[in-house]
Length: 212
Image (cartoon, rainbow, N blue to C red; front, side, top):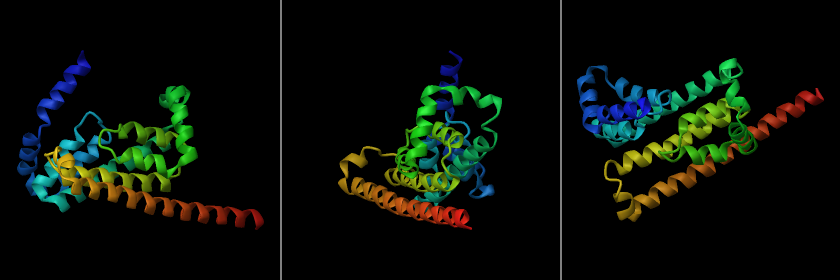
């Protein structure tokens, strides 16, 4: 009951109009409020990232709005990951380690690395807060996670910024769909190549240490 009430309050307060008024009210702080809102969403997942991104695009323009939303979202995700990675072995997280479904997801992420993280983070309605926590608990490297977050959030936030409020245009205008899909494919290919390079480099250093 309390959870439903909280969600209802969030929906009523965090409307596009209210967020635009907020950005306008604190415009003396420059880009900071626009960065801070998606940053906080990484810690408080009930906050509406979609609304924040659209509001930033409306307030600052497509490209600058996209950039500050991306910086905030990536910064928040990396902070959550690092905090969980540092404190994840403490008692408060024991129940997560023992949870069978969480263990299954952790093992899957450890085996596949960049690929599934990138794909999951591309979509705006994926529970990215949960992904950040599970990735932090797993043995996924910081480099793999950072790469997946930067690329995946880039796709997601670009798609939201580009499509804007009119979500129906994504289906009515094929060119928008093609552009977003092309960005996903390109970033996935680039990300995989970087991951292979990092793995090769790490493997080379490991072999060198073993020989030396």
